[in-house]
Length: 164
Image (cartoon, rainbow, N blue to C red):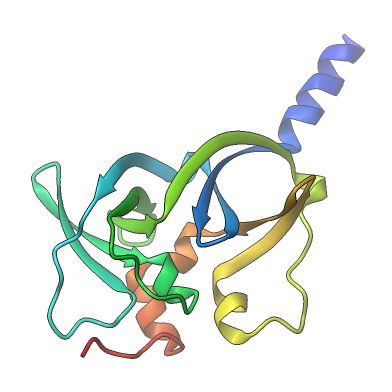
């Protein structure tokens, strides 16, 4: 019985993270917040949208607004297509997409190993990052999907530049 209690306690302290790449950086999102991975897709541009809006893509009979994580991080958009993760917007009960360079493995991480953001991070990173896990090969920065919501990004005012 005691072993079962320990196993349950250990399970409560772990999280399943989907790893993803943007440039040379490794990021992760809780798999429970990912609805679907669409794979390589090119979003349709939206005129006069903020730069961080990669565009829209058709999704199950609807239109999915897609945010470019590269642009949010201050990187240039890729000329090639990227992978889109469909995330749930719990506030609006809708979905949105996040365009990344590539999707990797699903990893089980110990929540006790999650380190807080350093206080001296720039405002953009503080807005997007939700801590980091130290890995053998570097850091995996945890992203909170609710911070990536297009409406929250617009309200923050930090990412407000428009497409030319």
